[in-house]
Length: 318
Image (tube, rainbow, N blue to C red; front, side, top):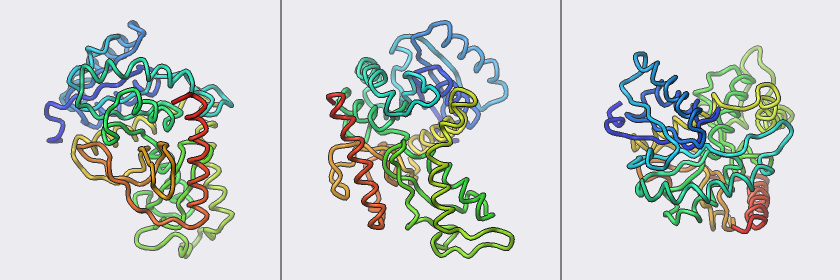
């Protein structure tokens, strides 16, 4: 990829998500240099060594690591994955305080060493952390955004594809709002190919795509993360791939439409919160949200999601 020439992506946190994101970036040839930063020296050194040992089998790239912000100097993109680990049965919002305080502590040093970097927040609860990051860094909103519902939308498309018998690449559907329990599937604007999903005629051998199926899918999208955490302790592969895709959209100046979490003040009457809406991601980061048509029910759900997030922001004094 031409856009990788000289590009540097730094990942804060060498846990399951951070290390898997680094692996995805290397496998996809997304960046020329991948830097890992973690407070655990032995852990970060081990991850860097393990990744570097596979360099014969990936696109040309170097892997570096350390415990100090200096390892992130001159980054094009900084991906923040550090934070408390989500425990079985624990909601994303319950993680908030520890992770918010960590972000507030670490981010200013990163801005010092890489003032022009685009910051992509991945740590949960991502919408709250993204808002805290905006306040802690003082950077313009286009430079700081969260991975938002990119993964949730991927889960949604996968399930729609499974139920309708088409390739997932031909399903166009988004989750909006919180990356969490109050998220909203935007069924009214979803399509398969050129056909609105609400008008979908089932293929031979496949069931009706009715309200019951839509409700089941929406429930599964929200709860699948809990199922994965219960079984193996963390979600890491899909979010690693999703994050790599966001990184590529920035480095390649792709103007790709992704439902990332941005400061959405004023959109459909939403107050000062970060939440996910289909948006344009390019070399400037993200500063254009699409005026996505919403049904009355979807708009009400989005405003409710924003209210939930606003309550959390006030709870932590942000």
